[in-house]
Image (tube, rainbow, N blue to C red; front, side, top):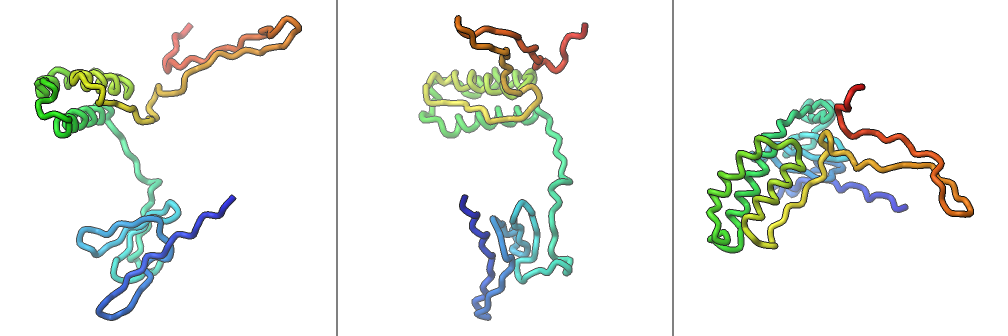
Length: 189
């Protein structure tokens, strides 16, 4: 197994002083703030903000480590799916290969399908709706590939299980394993 190459340093070179300063000894990626005064970098899964004009020491108070484990995000699935639908519709409108949208009134198609978003129950339902939306164009060059998502109910498919024993006549089932429901609210008995 090959060792991972060390992360490169981020160096600032001042032309007027002909001087270089190592701002960050190891960095995987970074971004400069819009005003150019701060630098945010990632190294070894740690996000850190520092001034961009000089090296910041740990104790200086200018080096700020972002605690990612404190971030909590709550998403409203219908809002997320609505945004995804709107973006898919807009991207087709803006980049479809023919300006007349294959003869479709694309605004009318939007008005017909958009209300369905409010009745979706899962990301898979959104994918089905997008397939229908793109199907209105009657082309084989419009695709929907669902992203891998980790939403409730998107677990892998259950499989049957059994204990088998090889006999002279072939395989014999000696026990069928009990199944596990994927229904989050199984019927109570």
